[in-house]
Length: 467
Image 1: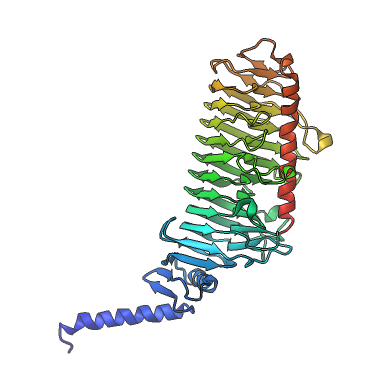
Image 2: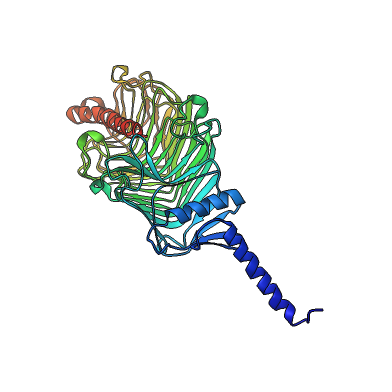
């Protein structure tokens, strides 16, 4: 019989040995180990951590482990892809874990390169900085994080993505490639209507800096997308919702926009914070709430847009709530808008504060079908309980082509309202003859939103064709 004193020692030996056997069973290098229920990855002495992190995620997916932890300070990776992972890929913190995407490490010829690709599953990326410069190296398109459906079986499309307390920083206009921070859409090759990606995307308390595109989502079937408490600085197009049928909440973010002067003028990039577009490929309905955000116009061009929304080729039901936001203009931005909505019905603009210079703060209008827009009447909007007291805009509210029945409420500090059709319910304005006062300035604003929308849509289309 074993003595009582030897039993704790033998138990320790047994547990240590079991842990060692479990780590070896992962099938990875010695840099990957199992610590309880967590797979830990140390930085590799070779300077390339792609294989180790790939092995750790594969092992977690196969073995049901829910946490893959990066325990060192610095990592360097190329392309990593995993299917069905349910759990967290975590660093120590934004400041204490940096993962660098190697230059020219992604294959972007005819497809979008991805550094961290999650197909199906419920995958979170947390507590790290992801640094990227020219991951394609050839002028291609790449995404740092992508959430996809299953490219091998397009009917499998429920994916749940979460990016929490992550910094994604790029090279801006000096990089060779078009780089996106976070992307969620159907996998390449899954193009049918019943193959659109479903699920949810949450981007929380993260920072996007010096990227071409911040977050792009195209979720179907009313999937929830939450973009909350993030900061976007010097991003060509911080947030894009494209051909989506998703319930989107954009809450308490800080958007610096119109703050990147280095893009070609025809691209439309560097001018707009939130871009929402539907085309003939779009589902029939969409819903967007923007609440308690800060929009700061950097004045890099004369036409900066806080929110630019439009419908191309097809009319859909898109309801919008724009509430409690603060829009701060710039003296250089004489033709832009806080909110410009083209061919979009049914919205509420309430409780926002508008200050500084802009061409117009709220611009509602129909586009022309000859230019590719859906056309048709614009109704169902109410603009109420906003604060225009610090506005220096040429026109505070512009109700343009084919608008009717739109309500502009009282007690909004006498905004300057331009009702171009005369068919709207304007209950308060600082001028009784506003429609004939700002001819040349109004003409510039009239065309600017449609031009910007078309430029950005064409840029996104060209970028996504490289997939």
